[in-house]
Image 1: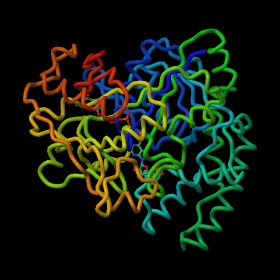
Image 2: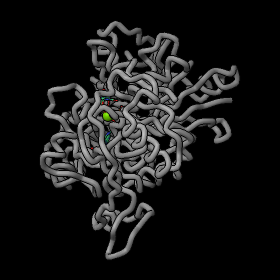
Image 3: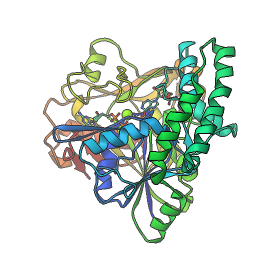
Image 4: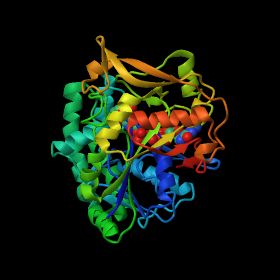
Length: 426
Ligand code: GDP
Ligand code: IMO
Ligand code: MG
């Protein structure tokens, strides 16, 4: 039995999609275990940029079966739109290649409305994909599972009843007009008709693959610091984006996990509200974010929002390594640091006159922390065409080595551009 886990080590958008795509060339099954279409994974293939939200990033590798696990929340309407978009890019997205867990929960129209209503009253800056309300209903045992789509009429009726219930909340708590429950039922029943062939017992699919010695890759969405339990609560998403989410979100035993790959950028970004110790403003921030002229500039794949940017935070990265048992790191966007001098690494926090080397569990404490930096010399050579570690500028090599020693995990993969071949394997 062998599962490789790939997950985000920061606040998301580390480049998980493109690293999954690279590893999927050597995998038989790629499974998403958490989140929903709040994720946005951009994968560049030549002139094309494929944007995935719900479909696992193994879909672009012909030999890969792709599984949406029970820990995921599925918006049927958006799922169908995404399937059509990926098909339009010439990819086979048939039930032969994509399976949706019968135990995954469905994002219903009421969830979208509640997410938007809460955000309008001053939320945390969600993606407004209905994620929080959908997981809330799951935990409250009020949810509708994907397996219900096998009977589209009954499913439509469940959607109608749910919408009627949410309408009462929308009116009482948010002074919002009611949703059209009949229209919701009808459109969801139609979507169910089309999604029905994709439904499967994914527990069985994954365990059969493990029994047969196939290579299984678990793909995380969101990231460690957005984890509902271990992230910067309440500025988090509503699922477990950390390694525990793999066990519950796919139904696999811990012994099956052999490798845990943490994906992190050579700097830090975050979208939405919440503390961010190394955040930068002004010229330097613009330099790291980019203007939006390049497809990889720091603007959200799902919402288009400009991402907040800052130096690499090793206190947070060390926490992610410990929490997830990260056995190796994939360091992305090394090319973006080219031309900056010095390059800074945050090695500890200053809080009330004390030095903290542990990541605080309380977001209020984190918000009061100031970064303590170690400055490293930068490099000005273009690294985008480098394919071997020893061909990197010596200061870039030192940077990577310092990151691994401070983080406590080896950097096995470095990316120097968004293209498939812009990778350095070590
Ligand atoms: P994900 O959510 O973790 O999959 O990451 P996103 O796709 O949201 O954001 C990562 C962005 O960086 C995408 O636009 C990628 O194409 C791009 N990207 C990934 N790796 C690199 C890299 O090494 N260099 C550059 N310049 N861009 C990269
Ligand atoms: P990928 O998989 C970055 C953030 C939102 C918000 C918080 C809660 O592309 O890395 P939600 O809609 O989940 O209830 O929003 O989480 N967020 C992400 N930030 N990358 C993501 O996904 C994210 N998914 C959610 O911005 O702060
Ligand atoms: Mg993203």
